Every structure is written in structure tokens, then in C-alpha cells.
Amino acid sequence: MLLLFAISAGGATQVKAVEPPTWPPELPRDTPRPIGVPKAASVCEALRTRPVVRAVVEEQETHVGGRTITQQRIEYVYSGPPGLVGQTFNDISIGPDFRGAKRGARYLILAPLKPGETGIWMLVPWEDTWFREDGRSLKAWWPARPNIDPPHGPDYENIVELAEAMETVCNAETEDERIDLLKGFAMSATSEVSVGAITLLEEIVPEVLLRFVDQTNVRELPIRAQILIDNRMMKLQRADWRDSESRQRLIAAWAADVIHHDDSDATLILIRLSQAIQTDQIEPQMMYAILRPIIAGDLPQALKGEVHSLEVRTLAVSTLRWIINDPHLREDVFNLTISVLEGDDDAGLKLAAAGVLRVLEQADADECATLTTLRDDAARLLAESEWPSNGPVRSITSWLEETVARLFPNDD
Image (tube, rainbow, N blue to C red; front, side, top):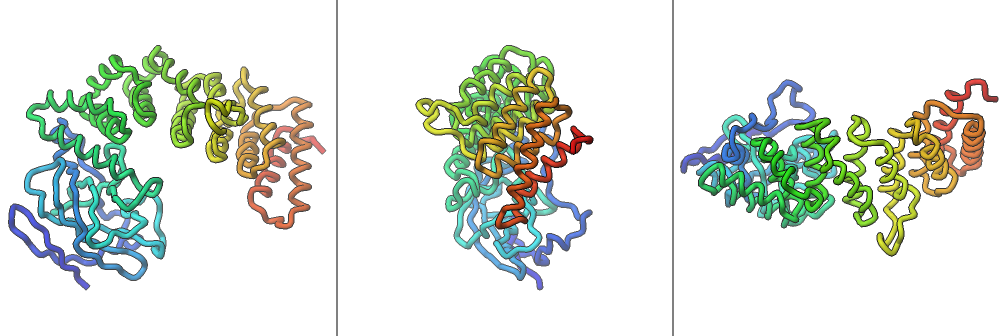
């Protein structure tokens, strides 16, 4: 069966017959897919080759297996080449019945688009038409849809603000004006706008980003922008940035202000620092100073209002694996990990702590006794459990047995 789609170009409309998309999983692995565009030489080129548009769904057809094919007509162009208004592009979304879907795949939209629905899209060229860019270009999600709220999609109003910022930059008369505008938007309190501007600066004029960071109090930017700058500066300057006073102040601020961050920001910080500790981008002592109050749950309620969620604490516990063998921290990190196994009731926290012990390289006699007791208690709990196949309890028991056997092979 062929589908007929109208493709407008240069004022003329052509009707193009295409086979219904069959991917995934039928599409051969070597079939070309839209994976972005070559690196642009200027801000203007970057914005024109990755148009940001507002488009409305005109047609929809759902196929067996959960794939939904839609046709969108461009209503408004925020940034991009001339002549896009009125053109159409096709897209594939999937519903809950789709089999074989993988997160991160380019075709993944969990809520199928419906006729009449309007969204903000970034597009990339593909053969003789356009295709949705959902690879986090400008570090944003595409498309943004007013009826899909976080965490299932981006904040629509913030993406509209980002699109309008890119429109302002695109309409500037000179490249110098565009760069100046990007530096201004980088200071925005809206994360999506700040991050999008910083991303373009790093991509097109990294030397400008270096000067911007040197002249800016990065700690005044949104957390996502702070993390992006830390990541990009490590890429651009490596040890010079890692050892700089600006970087040390930034990390110290994350540690000192962790009690003020909500769970979303705390999660972003922990993920970034988990990456940093693995590549020698942060001192283990500073890492421990950030993790300990989150794990212990002893943040003053007068300041934080409440302790961090179990999800954040579990992520913090898991991150201990990267510092438990540090000679200056080993005892403190070991005791903190054991306190989670002994004192917390949540199975997820205990499982994360048991995972940390799996990388422990050595232990003394007292620690051997502690680990053995924990192993025996976990085994007894599993034996007495009404559900002996309980995943977390079984994994905790197995990992503790593995740890004791590895560290103390002669233990009875």
C-alpha cells in the first residue's frame, strides 16, 4: 500500500507516493537515517540547517503493530531557510502496543500525534524532505507538545522561549550581532534558553565561550547550564579548567548548596559528578563531602524542608563505588555504606550499597566480621521471606556472598 503525501517546495506542491515506513525492526541496519548535519561554519548556517518550526498535524494513519504515521504542515518558522511555511514533513510515532521499541531510538514518541495538534519541531534534511530531529540538538527535546508535560516531554513554554530566542538570533543582520545575542541568552534564567545558547557558542565559536566563562559568574546560571559549561570546559581546557579557581568555586558551591537543590537538580549534579570522578575531574574528598549528607539523610529540615528522595539517595549511594577504595576515604566510605545496609529499610538503597561493596578491594578482620554478619542476616531474611524469589533481597544476598568469598576465600 502506498501513502500519498504532499511536499511543497518553492511554491509548487508535489504529491509523492511513499511506502509506509517499516522500521523498526524490518529496516536493514545499513539503511541511511537522518543523523544530523555537518558542523556549521557560522551561527547563521547552524540555525538554517536545523530549522526550528511550529507545525500542525494534518493527517494520521495507524498501522498494525502500533506505528502511527503523521503528516505535519509548517505554520511558522522561528529559524531556518526561506520558503518553509506551507511545506510538509512526515513522522512516525508509536503507541503503547508497539513491539520492539527502544528508548533513545529516533522514532520514539510514546504518545501518538493527533490531527490538529500543534508542536515545536527541530528538523534536519533527509533526502528530498525534512525529518524530525530528536537527538537533543541544542540540548532540548523535540518535538515540544503543549499537551505533554514533564517528565514525559519538555516544558512547552520553555521550548517556545528557546525557539523565540533562536528566531531573534537568526534575524540579526551580522554574525557578530548573533554571537552577542547568544552571550546574552546564555545568561537566561530559563534552562532551555541558556543551555541552547551555550551549546551553539561551543559548537561554532568555542573561543567566545572561553571568554564568556572567564567573565561570568557561572554559579548564577541555571544548574543545567552550569553542568554543561563544566562538561564543555573540561573538553576544551582539560587540566587547566579542572585546576582553575573558577572550577573549584563551582564544585564547592555544588557541595555547599546541595541542601538547597530540589531532587531534579541534585540528580543532574550527581550524574555529572559521577562522570567526573571516573575521569579524575574532581577530588575524591570533595565528592564525599557532597555525597555523605545526601546518603545520611541528615540535611537540616529548616534549610532543605525535607530530605532528598529515595531515588536521589540511591543514586548517591551507587556513586560511592568510585571512591570506596581511595586510601584516604576508604574507612569512612565503608562505614557509610554499611550504615545503609544496617539502618535503611528500603531494598533499593540496600541493593545499591551491596553493589558498592562488590568493588571493595580489601578489608580487615573487623570489616570481615561485619560483612559476614550482613551476609548471614541477608541469607536468613531470604530464607524466611514469603517470596524467596524476591529480586532485590536475592541480589543483596548474592552480592554479599560474592564479596565475602572474594575478600576472604578461607572464611568458613
